[in-house]
Length: 574
Image 1 (cartoon, rainbow, N blue to C red):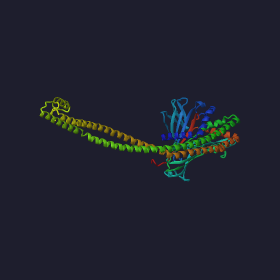
Image 2 (cartoon, rainbow, N blue to C red):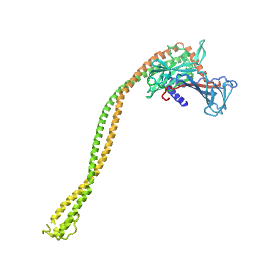
Image 3 (spheres, rainbow, N blue to C red):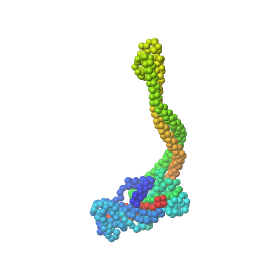
Image 4 (tube, rainbow, N blue to C red):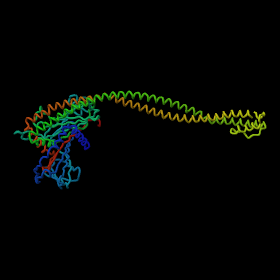
């Protein structure tokens, strides 16, 4: 549960950031305003009054675990009592049951009138507990499908046009004398609701009284409502209509909804109302209204510039789309060339493999050829030895290396005799075969070299083929990617077009808000200003007095916020 609440709180912070107008106002009030004078608060029975600046502070968070329709299942209250003076004991008041110290071992002693004395030993106290008590403000969630009311259980998995409406009811008020009449002044709760919508499920999302933030996968919806404030200020809705509900509308495909989170807090109104109370004169108020009018003028000018910028972006997007078309054509040519290169490399690899195999076969015959030729040469030399011996010539035994030198010596000594002449003829015959023998050796050596080269060529062609294949695959992927870009270009242009149209709607909406909202507010101030100021003072006072849900000691300052977490409407994980 704690993890879910943290997630919800993060979502709510996103909602506050998305509602930039409210955030800016709160920040301005906090920084520009001056602190309210310190006041003494009546002490609880048996305790002394403590000056405001010396009091302990109770920071209370009320977690409301609710069903999908907003009905309450359980309430858990978490309190942080800040021991500002480091006292040994803290006198607290609480209506909680099942109290548990969640960060330390300090204990409390319960007494009458819901009193609780903590043995603090100088420490802050963090505790939580349960409570069965009506909430000061309620959240009701209703659903429709194609305009017809439907329960969240029956809506699960359905498709169509759906709406999710959050209605807030403020029950916490005081009767205050305004202009001689008793008027209900409600505690000014600001209700911030955050919803995360899966873009695979929801499309065409819109929200009343809120903002949308789309990150591509999800649409974060942040809505704001101020239940009861309209009545507290006594403003006519034709003058200024303050929202009291948030409604989300979308097309759903297989409806499924995550937990929603709503934050209710009144503390920020303490500062906002204070600012109005500190105006010294009507002139200051007029100045503030002039600044508000100037700010609206700047907003409207800014929205116009935004529209102009989006028009320029749209033109650039069209140029980008044209460039992507050219890039796609070039990528197609590259892909075609890479495919051709891969096919050609395949054929070359096949030829190189065949050449290598043939030369391998030839090289295998080299030893036999060389051996046979050497044997024939030796036979011829043996025959020559026999012929010389038969002719009575005394000479060394002939070899392939010495036969020429030996026979030339015999020829030189025999002169032009018949013996000198089967010798000259014998040498000529041996020379002829020696030439053949040397040529055969050169041939077989060349075959061996060719065999090695063909092997290297075959290996290189394999590498070439692999590279060509990779190039072909890469070119194909490049082409597919650019094709995706080209196919996405219309969506890009359509998106920018929608942004441009949205900027126009924003500009028109700001103009309408200025006419129907700000200017009417200015008119309202110009009219019943005195009573409105009294009501604002009363709202501030009521807000300041509401400091706790579960109880608080009169000697403490406090603030309280409520966090609703509705259960998911989703059967996918069941």
